[in-house]
Image (cartoon, rainbow, N blue to C red; front, side, top):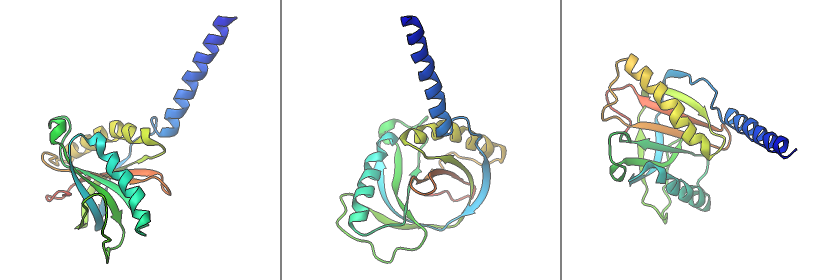
Length: 188
């Protein structure tokens, strides 16, 4: 009897785990396409160190922006170095908020130094992946980047020294858009 209960619990856990990963998009096919996007108007914070720590910046933005009356933005990250070839402590990135319209006034008093810039309209290889939980971010990295890299190589683009960009929309669209620039000038 105890064995049947134990096996039942194990089976339920396995089915639940598979269901959860299905919900997160683990079994979705990654569709890579070419798009012209931008311009993007961004408030960003430069960081150096392990990419896993960018969540601290996102948390500060999500807490402080509403307090300053800033709304209607998406979160983004520009990852400037390949984490497979650059030591963790030297990884450079830029993370912050992306707006669809220019910002006329930048409020002061943030806990992080923020800079305003415009990322001009460019051609990108893009892929979308569901953003349903924190785990989705890591799952997307492991599913999307190999596909984007493969298509980039097939198109003859050189990613050496180029940044990648991720745009996160966790509220309405529940999506992460991954971007590789196809233009000779990269994202940054």
